[in-house]
Amino acid sequence: MGITVTSRWKVVDQDSARKWGKISSAVWTKAGASNVRVYQVMTGPNVGNWVFALEFLNLGEFGQAREAVRATPEFREWTAEAAKVGNVMMDAGIFETVAL
Image (tube, rainbow, N blue to C red):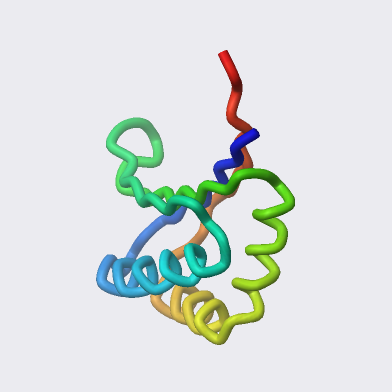
């Protein structure tokens, strides 16, 4: 069972989002994410929003990674800077792979 964890962001400061996106991708990968992707919404009511997608083998690995990431100084720094520059997380989700 694969898991993809997403967060959708209203990005006001793209330079800050790029800087911290690179850093957070490295932190999440080090913590156990098997893949990290970033998308920009192209259509619909959320045009321009960014979606960060993190892939894990299962929920247990995601839980362990989340705890590890939240304990890093980088996590505290990127959450503080996001709030300061106006980059806001709009929603988040956890998706399970479906075998067809």
